[in-house]
Amino acid sequence: KLSDRLQCVLEQIPQGSRLADIGSDHALLPVAAVECGKAVFAIAGEVNQGPYDAACKGVAEAGKGAVISVRRGDGLEVLEPGEVDCISIAGMGGALIAAILDRGQSQGKLQGIKILALQPNVAEDILRRWLLNNGWILVAENILKEDGKLYEILTAMPEDAAPGMTNDHLYSDLALDGGTVMCNREMLIEMGPWLLRAPNAAFFAKWQGEINKLEGILASLSRSELETAEEKRNVITARIKQITEVLQCLP
Ligand code: SAM
Image (cartoon, rainbow, N blue to C red; front, side):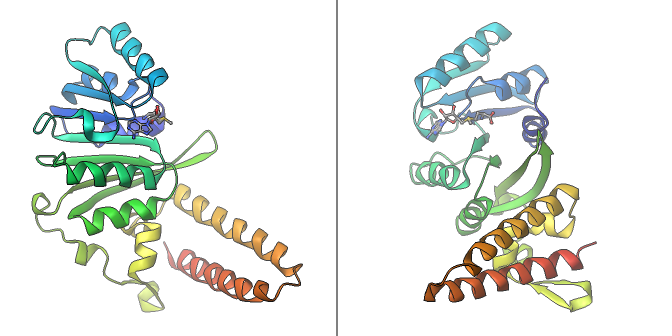
């Protein structure tokens, strides 16, 4: 059985896709995707030998060698143009996922891709910003808690394939609590435009955790005699206030 995290990534994949799972490790996701019919064909990409071997083994044990091609290489380099129409990248930092997409895009590897299903472990904001600046529209966001960890899953489509949706609309200032608090573009990029519009318990847990972390930093700074400490304290206090205000206004 897939973890809830990978199950959520799987759910973003349209039925009948040709899927590339980059950083596939044991190839759990492509195997599950072909087994349930979400993918008719899949590529499992891996840059490192150990996980590449694990992917080969996973595919062989599942008896899916005819429909899953395991390839060793960096990021989207393993893809030929037009081979797939859906890409998943899960379990890496947001900056690494953005760098993989960026290199792939400049090599033309994102041409013909209809869906990106991405699960950054950290730095979701970096990934949202990359999507926003590169003609991709976030069409869904999920956040869930598993084994004490919080995971976000971001799903994106090319701008021209998401009729009626624009990034301008998605990231335009969001009035909360009848306009008492305005969530600006930066906050939307950081917290997630869909998550903010429909927050769940995992979302509140994530941002309460962020507040707790900042309060810890504040406490250690308050013991510091350094001149720069006060400046830092002010920045952190303002940030705690901003996040708290937003959380208090959400349904
Ligand atoms: N995707 C699986 C999951 O979510 O459970 C495995 C995640 S694992 C933590 C990250 C994997 O990404 C590792 O197996 C690593 O070797 C691979 N990886 C890291 N950078 C990569 C790159 N540039 N191209 C392909 N694979 C990469």
